[in-house]
Image (cartoon, each protein chain N blue to C red):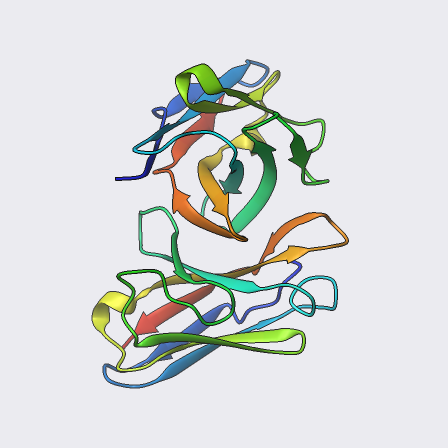
Length: 110
Length: 117
């Protein structure tokens, strides 16, 4: 049981906009920044969004993040086949004194 | 290019010990936090613990406290994750990652550990 809650799956067709939610609590998302990671099949995770809505160099602006209260969201617009991957949210948890992950969302591009 | 290079895949028997490594290259491996993340087969990411390279301050997730040991050798730019007695349930991919400014910005390629009799 992950501390942060994500839907196990999401899907969309090429060109569509998809959002993935991440729900937490006051000790994690409510009081700290949220990061998102993309894990393509058979590869290591990669930082996708940090500090709620910042993109590292090289990440397309099709990817965006937001946070409200104790929840966060990742949005992918102009969906492409290569976006098919697992997506994880992560935030520091003040009670656990360490980072916590969501359970991951498997995105399928139909 | 900043990279974390992890040691190769391991196949071990239950009860054996193991130490896997994570070597930093392309940057100074000092005054930073390096964390370890477990991914069991077909499952999500789990935080194991983190070590500060400056003074070896180490913090463990409650789920992994007492189960593993995290250490560092700054002279060779390398962090380690070790087990004294492996169990079949330790079968997983283990990733190291640099924690910089509140995010895991550089990840290793992962070390696959298989524990089977």
